[in-house]
Length: 402
Image (cartoon, rainbow, N blue to C red; front, side, top):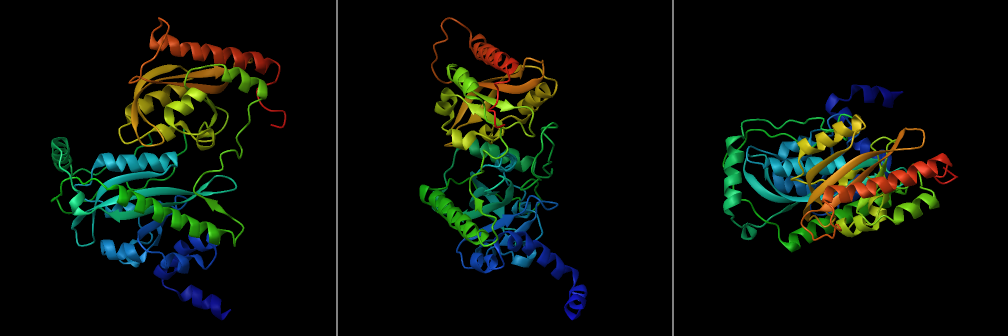
């Protein structure tokens, strides 16, 4: 009883601190905070399940790098490190990575507590529940980019001027996909600190490797301590959980189609990918283990047009086909001009069961056998429709166990 009374007497700040700490201790055991404190480097962990997607852990190295004490950042959104000249393109790239639940690296201009700007390489990585694939936390590692690595480009200077001209406006978070569920906002808006901005810097290979190595060490520690609670976490989502498996007959039929495409399952939230063609694997660099169970947002990046994505979403909601010109990204981060055709696939009863996404790299050479690219893509759509309708009539779309 005495302990209960003491808890009630705790100040609100202490109760909030315990609530945030429980985000970690309840999942990784009570010893995880001490273990994280022993790790070098500047990093933080955020919890997308809590209102506002707050920071629930900040390393000692973060305080040394930014001037923010741990008590100053816990419970706040990670956008507090942004300032007037933080590039919106960098912020948009991080935002898309959060929505797509994928790792992301980007040089970004952050601000210390005293308002001074400094360049860091931000490495963002989701931490997944190994059992059901849920995102438990996001890890954000900050590696300082040395001044000697700075490189000047005329286009960058012009972009910097454009950012400065618009720095008085705050960035907005919009629900870009009204038919899809998204993770809460993070790294989104900017304040008005320090209009002085340095020229953009480029991270060196050693700085990129350092960020990756730090992230792997941190997730490894989380994984080790999560086993004490029976939870077990992973850097990769367990994509097979809850995802229907296609029948061998349908897999065989789809395997004969040579175009680059994926099939998404329209009957599950967020329309996960349940089939990827060999040509798609070759085009994007993703293995089937990487891609199955993910949303097609995994191909989005900093320069992917939100307006085009919204157009695709509207056509999906209205069960209509569309063809768009999109900037897409491979697993290695390289981009390509993607002529993308998205079309609903109906089963024998007329219900939309799948969507096919046919991707075409417009920067590569293709043999369309005298056809236009659009007609060539429609060939894949027609083949998938024939396979799905024929097999759905006999109940052979999914494996019997499903």
